[in-house]
Length: 344
Ligand code: MRU
Image (cartoon, rainbow, N blue to C red):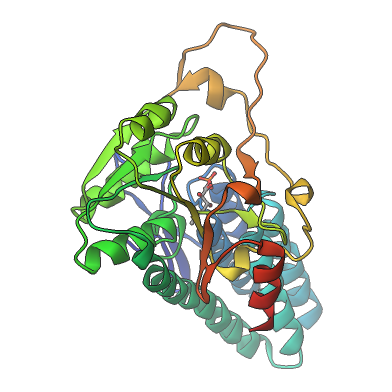
């Protein structure tokens, strides 16, 4: 089983995803700034995984303080809170850091040692809950998949994007565990190739049949009858169901609708943002132009060319057939089903 990020011997251990599939390297980290850089550079990536990393960031901030002044200790924790700004779109990062800070507020009267220990326990709860939630989504989601289906996915919403098991790939894993014979189609996912590098790698580890396609091959794959379902993850879901996910997801959703193929999103409730009424309220990260002009460190584009490099796009709710959560599958109209979800 792939464990993407965990805490051991007072260190955060994570797989450096920038090196996959060529090299599998486990990094040990004791420095919150280094962890923040790992999130920014996508060594740790995927909405739930960066949420777990954010929670561990608060722990590392607390553990970095070795003295006995509570003021200074609190200051170290406050500084660590900046990790929530490492990337702007995946709301799980802010959600996890805010949960840690809320918990910290509730135990402030305890001793420094106790606070350190209890922050570790809370971060561990966040990691463990994420793993459990993914398995629950798998149970709710896999009945949507049938033997014989070709299932298209975009980016990597797998074990590598979570603490383990995955969201979209968790549903796929659950279908396979239930004995269904399926084939996954993985979009390569330019510019950073999470599909080609990560989704194919982790599915191959599990022996799940997977075919890699370039992003511009989704249309022909649908027209040829290779795809019966689309399932993707999410970085932030607005209260009307509009969903931000990896750049290119929107065009896959439009193609799916055109071809009468159900398009599903799998995401934990921590990915919903009660402050975003619609997708217009979701901040979209823009990244360095080198990611577009270069592949594997080699320039492929004309020198001096203008570049637009948004890392995410928003799929309007009208293209989404269902949103798989740990509490069940939400159906349109999402204003109502999401509201009901919060009432459960
Ligand atoms: O830029 P990334 O690789 O962090 O983007 C990841 C995605 O868009 C995933 O699909 C999303 O975070 C869901 S992960 C379960």
